[in-house]
Length: 380
Image (tube, rainbow, N blue to C red):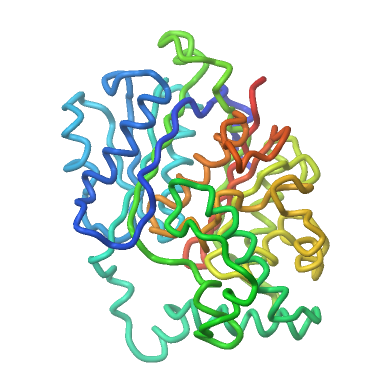
């Protein structure tokens, strides 16, 4: 293994910003993105001119949208890089910004996620069986839900309870696309594939998120409040390999990526206080809480039923509302997860605050073929 964040200089989240995730509107993506960036700058109490590099994650906006967006803040000559990695685009932007600071290339870097429906990626033009097998996540996760229930004896009600929890969390999140408490009966209405229902599937929409990262030198030089900085102690990106037949790629890939991130950060599953996972469909949260080591294989439904993944439980999972209820506008999603983790570790999450949160983990998967895990820790 090569060098990790632990081998380089410290990098911390010093500014966070969001534009509410929402259904498609007439709001230009530039306005969405700039809203999040300006909020992050105000949060860090720094000027745009002090940012030395920017990494812009998006999946459906097309070529170089970051340039057209950021020019409105002023032409400063900063390094600008566009990032596309499917659902993990924003998470990948975070990783590159972390490495930019950790290696000493920049003292201050920003990761931005922004997306807006309307542009169809080239990959979505696939047809026939190739599209059915590779580009039908709803069908794939309906089958995976059925397999999980058959293997572990879980019920449709236990799977749906994930959405009940996450809609409840999102109801108190002003940036969430859905902000309404849902009962189990409501969640079980409107089946769309197998036992999956409409409210167990993430909404697609638009939005933006921004995270400013800085070195200790940058924090001191710019007079940033060190007490509100949140250190990134692990950042790992992996892609799929050849697995044993019958293994779930997303589960094994998540387990491997998380294990590497834990080793890098010097923490373990028991140290986690808050976690944001790629819960595009309800069954995913159960699979990932198991893969991350929060509970044993097949125990995800029980872990949830016992309240251990609730805010105030052992580890608050998707306190933001997760992809299911906060939303999944592709590019912003992974950045927004880090925003939520930072907010929790600062103790600034309001009614969604998980008491005593010190260590958090953000997890994203891109088309089931790449996985990114970031681990953050409060500095004080």
